[in-house]
Amino acid sequence: MKNVEVDYAIIGAGPTGLYGAYYAGFRGWSTAVIDALPEVGGQITAMYPEKNIFDVAGFPAVRGRVLVEQLKEQADQFSPHYVLGEQAAELSAPEGGPVTLTTTQGSTITAKALLITGGIGSFRPRPLPAGSDWEDNGLAFFVPKPDHYADKEIVIVGGGDSALDWAHMLHPIAKSIAIVHRRDQFRAHAAMVTQAREMGIELLTPFEVTALRGDEGLAEVEITSKTDGAVTVLPAQAVIAALGFIANIGPIADWGLDLEKRHITVNTSMQTNLPGVFAAGDIAVYPGKVPLISIAFGEAALAVNNAAPIINPELGVFPGHSSGESN
Image 1: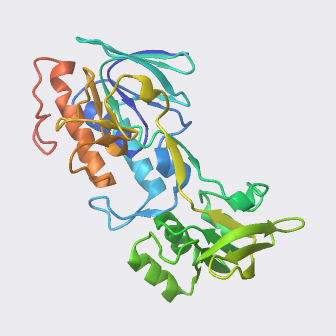
Image 2 (image 1 turned 60 degrees about the vertical axis):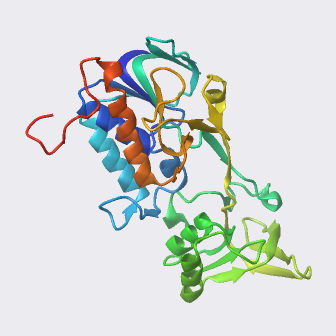
Image 3 (image 1 turned 90 degrees about the vertical axis):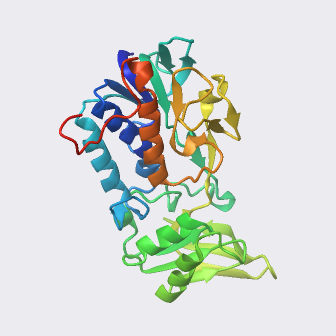
């Protein structure tokens, strides 16, 4: 258990939270960053550390792991206090402050203001019914280590962006890749689908996976046509089920925040209905919201700067430019 007292607390150690920690440090505040995961990076670290991200300003492409490393280096200039592997369980946010968080492990974090950047909350992958006995034995839901798939015949299940992203990333090292989707139309961006065809990635629609088989390890995948019931058997030593995930914002739902479909409602200052509590990133919602990582960074800066008068009534919202002679 820890007892931490800081100027600014941040729930969520993903990219938005790390950038928020940097910006709060830039303003001269002590910070604490709380996350249920044991390391920083949020969904990127847990789900796609080796995937390229294309919508971060200044980077034509940046690998997820590298982006997290650089965001942490940026935040660590100001020595934030990390409380990792602990989920924020209870919140007290009285008028006039302070804000107090209690974690599932009994730690207490007290702050003058709070920023919630918890992304989608806790998440678990949607299961592949036919593969329930093959998890961690040929069936995976994420690709943290691409080299594990070198020279393998791979079947990727799903029709969204993640399925196509995994296929593009693994194509240079895999022996073969087939994408199996239960519908004729892909949800992924049309250009990604076209590129996959041009690369020689086999696209099988509309099929569903009906069995995984093998003796000492996964050897083949049975798929069944949803059109005529025809059965096809594909050789495979690996299956990646990119079927999305089930999100749960957990204890946050019981904190008295105004919610809209598991998202926290904020105003133009990124402030919630609770005093001293702000939200940014995927978990925040407002009219015209566009859920992009580049916008989330701006939301974090808005949230931090609009908390300034709460941290210190003598401070203004505008921090000054970082390129100026002084902060």
